[in-house]
Every structure is written in C-alpha cells, then in structure tokens.
Image (cartoon, rainbow, N blue to C red; front, top):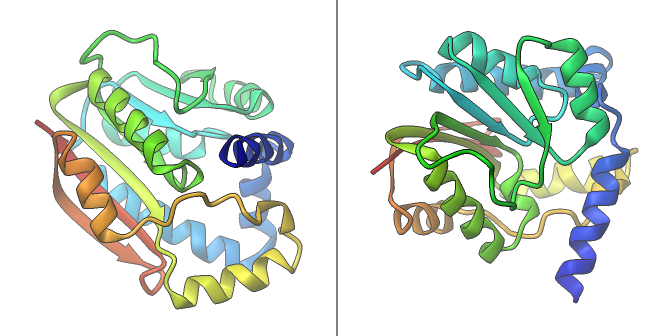
Length: 217
C-alpha cells in the first residue's frame, strides 16, 4: 500500500510539471544549464554507432528524443505519462512520434521492433520489481544485438547534499520520489540477468550521474 501511495503521489507530481520545465530551467538557472548541457553531451557520445528505429522512454518535452532522432537517423518514438508534455512535444517536433504511456506498461510494438531504446532519469522512480518488469519489456521490443542506453543518478554523498538543499530551495515536490537507490552492483545485477551486456559507461558531475550503454543478447 505504501509503495502504491508513493507511486500515485509521484504521478501527481510529475503531471503537474510544466511541459517546458527543463527548457526554461536551462535558460534561467546556471546550475540547471550546466547539469543538462553536460548530460546532453554524454548522451550524444553514447549514441555513436546507434542507427535505426528508436524508443525514448520518459521523453517529457521531447528535447532528448529529438537529439536521438538526429543521431540515429531513423524513425523515433517517445513515450511519457504526462499528456501535457506529450502534446507539447508533438507541437514542437511534429516529425517525431509521441504517445502517452506508463513506463511499466506493456508496449504495443511487436517483438524486436526497435534498434535502440533509451531511458534517462526514470528508473529511480520505481521499485526493484517494477524496474525488472520495465527491463523485460524493453528486452522484448528491442532487437537482438540492439542497444539500450540508460542514465541514472548515483546518490553519493555529494548528490545527497545537493539534493537536500535543492528540495528546500524551490523543488520540494520531488522529495520522496526516488524509490530505488541505484548502485553499480544493483544495475549490473538487474541488467545482466535479463540478457544485457554493458559495453560502455561514463560518470559525470563528480560521479552524481551515470550513463550506461548495453547490448541486448
């Protein structure tokens, strides 16, 4: 019951986030600009060698989805739980494909539909059992030999200090929305046992954010 309550609260929080929240944060806040600009560079680096049809899970306003489309040159889809964000993304990037879908739900695509799946700053909002279900569904829609790229916060001491003050400086709504503490060991266990092989990894922001590229067996 507690987990379900937290999930509902997170859904409510996320639905209230404005579609251009991150875009405006980058423009108006030097810290957010630095954080996200460095993330985008790391994502571009990981996308090297990725081509074909792509799915971006948790796309929000579609900015990273567009980056993925430009890098892969293929048909690109984005999904998110926020209907407002999806409407905004459709207007901003009409050449891409967006839909409202829960990350933990079964996707409508056939087995092996995608060459690439990405998932940035999403998994930490789910329990370990939910994360495993998401991974299994990603595996189903990803081709054998296809790539999965994830980005996750690493809650080291520096991250905890910054998160503490950030939540009290105007972002209190996000407090308590991280359900699962992701570590190198937990990530390796979850993905390896589900048939993914890690081929590239990079830590940025003094180890507070990790991006990992996997290959599906």
